[in-house]
Image 1 (spheres, rainbow, N blue to C red):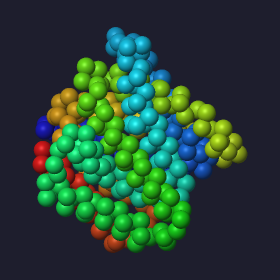
Image 2: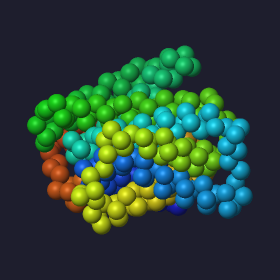
Image 3: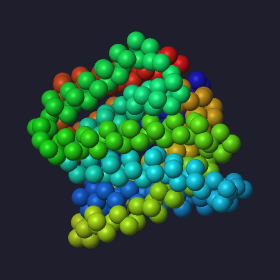
Image 4: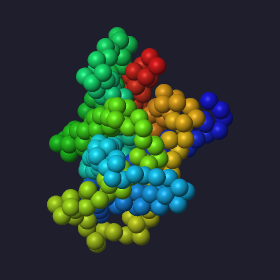
Length: 286
């Protein structure tokens, strides 16, 4: 990897790590559906407009089925789950649990492709799940149903992300990555609008800070973040681009401590080390 690639990787990790901080601020005002829908609609409109102006053909009629599946698995469901989790658990928790995505990716690969996991992959999966258990049960937040619900929501998001990765690998070989990213976010944001009827935003809590966080989350974390990620995919390949997974939790915990005063304990650092170490063992086979 070139120095510019390392710079992009670090910036992307900082951006995506910061998304958990922003969601923590936004969730009480917008609710899970409002949070996810607003960031996706804004990002989708911006990306579709930008790439269409540059001559990118999205081919809606031909590819709407693939776009919709990816929208659900890679955006609508996980973003809503993280919005729900942001109501109950610290940003650092969500960022670390999100790093378990490759663990579930191994399970999906075994089910779909018949890939037999190596002993190193099994050890990695066990370490990662132990790390989540340490964070959820022994972190600075007292164990409660809210903590379990928030952690479960993050794990659900990780399962969806990993399933989306398998689907993208098997069903989108001929599609342009930027078209997928743009269309999926716009579709996902649209699909989530009805959800606000069940968990609607609280207007009294929508402050200028919440609005600023929403715009930042949409434009920086979703739009710019996806562009950087696909640039890394094109320049470095999927394995090296995936290494951003190791760094996102570090920034997620750091931003939460700096800006929200979230507590970092030795046990939480130990749990984070288990998750990151387990993920490294899983991906190392490549």
